[in-house]
Image (cartoon, rainbow, N blue to C red):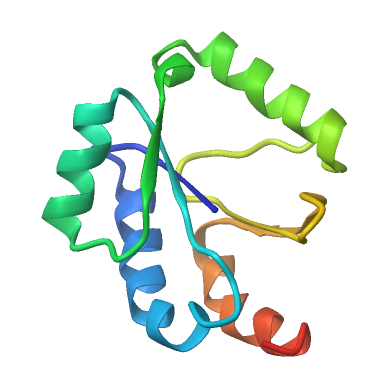
Length: 120
């Protein structure tokens, strides 16, 4: 899962890298994007960037307090309490929705190695 902003450089970088890795890993793991904004923003971004996986909108994303609340609640419910997620961050969850790890900025380059370590 990648958290996206439509005008964000880190989001664009993350999507570029995920587009490269999608063919190899999509057989084993599910990819999805969470766009901070409305459905139209998510659809337009997906088309413009040629994203091969679904992107869902987070309406509350335009309100930072609501977005923080969403992340906080999901963290408490799914094992990533205290975790902060910014646009361009990739979060990898297991089948029970517990966070295995998150990668930000240049750490994103570690994703193939980490997926390989998990047996993918």
